[in-house]
Image: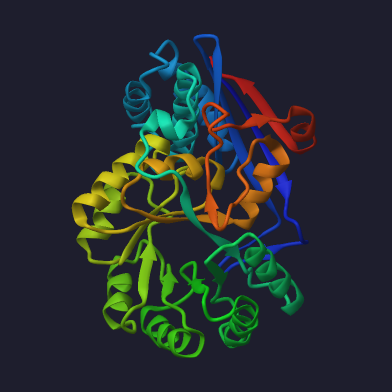
Length: 363
């Protein structure tokens, strides 16, 4: 394996949500080789995830069957036992798992969606961005872009300046019209009791029927409280910071969500997403994928519980800057290219080098 990291500055000076501001996005890339082919996978994480991928997980999967990523997954799970199964270790594992599934699909000469086994041909998606530091012009411009790509639903960040949010949502609603679903994401910026009040206001004034992470995903009692008191028809969603299946089980058992979420680059890669799908199907819970659109364009085709996936502005932009073959939304859906095996992605090394932080061969 070869592991490298790239840091891409944000499109504007900075971006923010309800609780955090950032000026760059870091992508940790894993390239796995076997059987005369290569596969790639990645996570959006601190470069420390790359060190774990190269030094701890790489040796644990060296020599594994390239057509059996499940074997490598179990080896990796054991290898990080002393590090813990959360945080950068989980992200490193996820990136390698995606790379190994990509490798398997390329060895089979199939798009990853077909190597997994499709239950659908295309993945419903929603436009996501609406950062809290955007001014009215930027909000309108992004909303118009979403409409040009045919998204039937869009998501806006809320919670940093709560008094400013109604006017911001008015701007977006004015651009998208009444027929398009408007989703909001609090990124844990609210206390449970205030989240209930804002949920009612967002629903009444802006037609919002989706409130993502109104409180932290770790506050399962708070999520349950918001869900119990939110207006009829509003879905409470959370789970993007789940690191493993037990985290999703805890959300389910707490009655904390109407829609389960997880991130393929954090929660076990392709293997983790397929296990999450089984959990959601058993619990009769719909699933919505968090970010990483180029990967979820394939993985989502194999998930029966999938409601939609997030076409997050930052991740879609980074994928276009670094890779050939990043999917372009078609009428609001992500559609795998049947002519390109695996994920259909190839690193444009000359373009990527300008953002490079480090590279290392796994032992």
